[in-house]
Image (tube, rainbow, N blue to C red):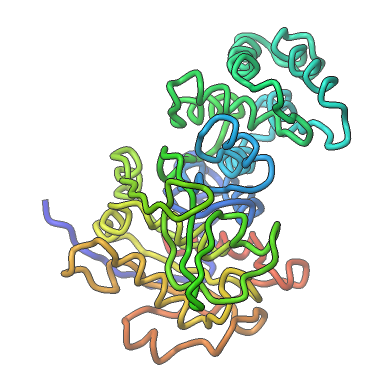
Amino acid sequence: MNAISVTRAVKMPDPLRLGRYRKTPELGPSVMFFSGGTALTATSQVLKTYTHNSVHMVTPFDSGGSSAVLRRAFNMPSIGDLRSRLMALADETVTGHPDVYMLFTHRFPLNADNRELLKQLEAMCAGKHPLLRAVSNPMRQLIRMQLKYFLDAIPASFDLRGASIGNLILTGGYLNNNKHLDPIIFLFSKLVGVQGTVRAIVNDNLHLATDLEDGSQVVGQHRLTGKEHAPLTSPIKQLYLSADPEKLVPANANLRKKNRNLIAKADLICYPPGSFYTSLIANLLPKGVGQAIAGNLCPKVFVPNLGHDPEQKGMTLESSIRTLLRYLHEGTDSTYSTEHFLNFVLLDSKNGEYPGAVPKGMLRKLGIQLIDTRLVSKRSAPEYDPELLVASLLSLT
């Protein structure tokens, strides 16, 4: 069977297309996102009203906050960003088990006594905690089982303060399934009625590391984002996967067949706004990701960050596009051209701020089409409006 590429005129936004998707979201398009933490939360919540078939490849490399506590204790990938995306896509209606949703989004207080929190966790495992009693069987029994695996495995010094119950359930399921993420993500998705597909880009316990332009190295995602540590003082030169959380030990990871198949079936691939290196580029590091993207002839769209991203120190919009293309090309067949990786740059130059001028000449030269449309509203400024962003992306499908 020969693959052909068909072009069509697109109205931005396309009200007829959007109306059809909203009417039957279970038949909506497979829009794929390569992302990380919370930047796409609001967008995901809007997206599920139009399609229940979006696919989210999420990085498991977070090394800060409560994720770091779990990673150190169990030598595991990060699951915090996975839980966040699962909950953003969860069915929040009465048909979507709101009692389970309440449990999975609950956090232990930061200022509580750890011994008291341990008693609460034990009560959950016994099914006696109010949040567990509100959940009906067999879901209650499934959740208790995962929490029991977690409780039996935690070291005596484990700090439960600030812990997300959803993270603890995911961790218990990870341990219960021979340290594989997919089975517990699948179960978690069913329990909260996730209206889409969420996958870790890899199952490996790896970390992020960088070479900076000044010759220094930084290891650990939490040291790159400018949130838990001071912002970088030198631009990032190269991003790596590391087997060690404290020093660069170069590591390789391979895209799994399941994820490769999801990329192959996507109706649109989006490189969304968010932490440029630790969310977007990190997803492209495993071997096979670029090759899988190039093999799908669907539209590919880059939505650049608005304003300042601490990870993009010294970068303009043009250098961001060139960096994205460089990582997409790495490890792929040399016969692939730009059109295999990126077709559109979607932005709002009238209402948004982008570092440097919009590189119209460079985009024309590379054959990338610029879509400059309203994406920022008065209520959302200075950020993208999730409704406008989703409408524009879906109009391209």
